[in-house]
Amino acid sequence: MAAPTSSVADGESIDLADVQGNILRGYRKSRVRHLIVQVINARQARTWVGATVGPDRSMAPAITDAAHWGERPPDVCFNLGITFTGMQALGVPDCATRSFPEAYRQGMAARASKIGDWGDSAPAHWKPWFQDSAAVHLIVTLHADTPALLDRFESEMMSGLAGDAFRICGRNEGAAFNGDEVHFGYRDNISQPRFAQVSPPGKFDGQPSAPLGTVLLGYKTALEQLKWNLPDPPVLGINGAFNAFRVLEQNVFAFEKFLDQAAEQLLDSPLADSLLAIGDEQGGGLVPNRLAAMREVVAAKLLGRWRNGTPLALSPRDPTPRPRVSDTDFDYVDDNAGLNCPLGAHTRRTNPRSAKIVQRVANHTRRLVRRGIPYGPPLGPTHHDADDGVERGLLGNFICADLSAQFEAIYYDWINLGLQDPRITGSNDPLLGANQEDASWFDVVTSKGSVRLRGLPRFVRTRGGAYTFLPSISALRWIGSNEKR
Image 1 (cartoon, helix red, strand yellow):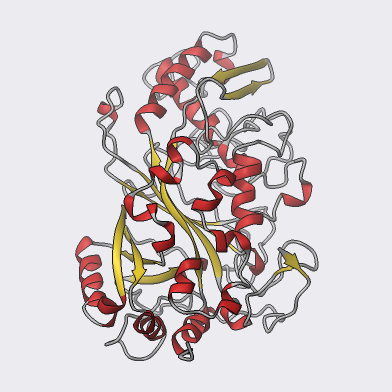
Image 2 (cartoon, helix red, strand yellow):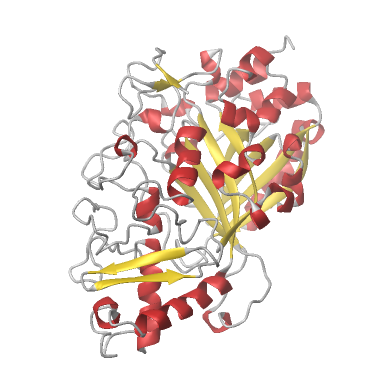
């Protein structure tokens, strides 16, 4: 919970070399490997954790921090998240572990109902290495551009001290394709919070700069005179962040099938021509036929952007406007009826920007740093009419300073209840929501009327995850050097 506090970070300056790099910077590597790790020897594990921020590379690889890389980035970026049971397994004193927030202590599996993980997304259906959540102690994350680099790094890491300290229970592998495209065909990784102290100068978008306390403990938040409580001792918390790591299976076949169904419904409505992209009303646009064109309209309405990333808020009827519009500098404040971007669209639900919402204080206080990369092979366009049975999805990291007030609040209030606006209350997010075909709905609104799309299935199923803490360099050193246990 939030409370007035003071800390050594009160001056709001930040030592980037004390912050794990994956919190404040995107690595832009094409591959990722998340190792799900169990502690089997607490003393050696603590020594290894401390060595990741020490000078001896023969004991452990170096954690990648947020300081500038210089001329050449590292071949492999290496970061470490620790679960609450991982803190206990490492022997962090009980007086320290008990001072962490309740959501982190309980863990993702225990709080499944708060984030829509029920039905076939429930923890009982997760991948085997997430089934015993108490045995998920660390998530070791490696970013590189080739599988060979990942293999070599993991082999070298486990051949020394780590091999006797840990057991690797599972691996989640991800690989980028078509730039920033995800399996539903959308361009991803477009908009992130901007932090005044660390982001490059200059105008990026119209949203206010996020205080460092949005993502890091020990700093001011967007809530006036409030900071998130620090663990005890403070060194364990300052410059650290929480991460909701999620393995999200994406049902591309069901998604493309729904686009067909919804496009046919809209084409049969009197609103068809007012919805089709400019040039496609009479079949003269770039898309080969009206059904294909309307499918793209539906995809854009569900997300809030055209699949190429162009925001509906700036270009509601043209995915390729000339001149180009900004991908990030837009708002919904002048679109209260949702004529440009639907009120229930994914991007608007999860970040309402300055739009009028019921919980007005929450407009800019729930922002997350999102790091995601696809897993599994793309489903080619010629296979959309047949489910190949192959699992594919997204490995997502949702990083924040408070899991309950940010990550869980977005999922519970906005994604799965629609509490930000009474006109969408009772509906779920069309892409991430825990939808059921017999109850789901999504409104497409125009100046000439609206159409309610029904029968949205659950497109995204949770296949695993954990709440971790991403300690600062100083905190990792403290964990590794405390040998009184």
